Amino acid sequence: MGASVLSASGLLVACANRSGGTAMDNKPIVVSTWDFGVVANQAAWKVLNANGRALDAVEAGVRVAEADLTNMTVGKGGYPDRDGHVTLDACIMDEAGNCGSVAAIQHIAHPISVARMVMEKTPHVMLVGEGALQFALENGFEKEELLTPEGEKAWKEWLKEKKYEPVINIENKSFATAKLPGNQYNHDTIGMLAMDMNGNLSGACTTSGMAFKMYGRVGDSPIIGAGLYVDNEIGAATATGVGEEVIRTVGSFLVVELMRQGLSPQDACREAVERIIKKKPDTAKEIQVGFLAMNKQGEYGAFSLQQGFSYAVCGKDKQDLLVKGESVY
Ligand code: SD4
Image 1 (cartoon, rainbow, N blue to C red):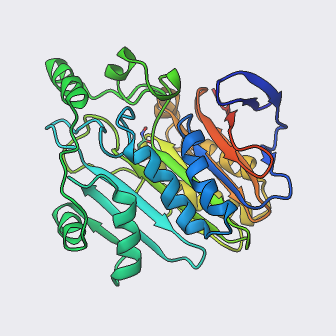
Image 2 (tube, rainbow, N blue to C red; image 1 turned 90 degrees about the vertical axis):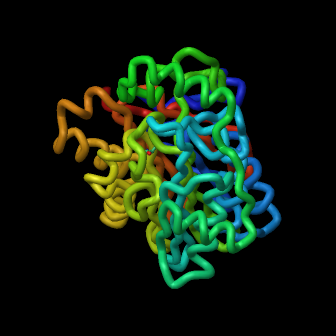
């Protein structure tokens, strides 16, 4: 099955070949996960098109998803954990291998910008929980209530059964009751990869994690090498879906290393997905994991366990491509 290319409105307009896609003249270019990546890419594009840095582009891009209150899986408005706390995970990585991360941070609407500050202002890579919050507040971030009335309502509904049961492309069954971004149920973490006019790569990944997770649970998204990895010599990769399986396989690092061995971005993503199946064949049938990658030539590709994973592409010729990725099942 070839990867189908959709317009932002969801109409099938063309077909990409098996190896994903190549942007015309290649740079600048930005790609990101899921349908909501289309609008996020456009914020990143403003930076890239003005000859800005890929790092600034990915931060600006994913902040759009973090600020979107209708998005229940990223930033403010994200669904809470089983105890009602909205806890956010994010990380960012630049062309020089610098990286920053926050995990299980509460009350801060833009964890990606805190992650960047960890990268730029501290000798550390990762801050978690109370420490991450303290650092954010000391650096001028505002303390906010992130639980929206909609999030609270969904949580109270979930409490009736208290069943943690991620469903393919949905995260949790309670999501299936409402219309979600892109008018679809398939939505998730945003991972974004960009290459600027200088050919430098950066990436960002941000999420509220799996809805109704245990308090203190951290997924793959803030973990460098799992949810995101950038190597400016080779390429970059990001992951979405059930983070436990991505952590077990150090998924994004694996994708970049497979590209180093000569695989195309799409084939590298496919191989990483196969690795998950090999390790946990029964689990793999029941969950979604998707990888998205870009190489140093600006070629991009994705692959997922299950159907339903989409990614957005923004380059010189077209700023609102939505691509339906290939999958194993
Ligand atoms: C996590 N990978 O916390 C993230 C969130 C996600 O479907 O993508 N959920 O495991």
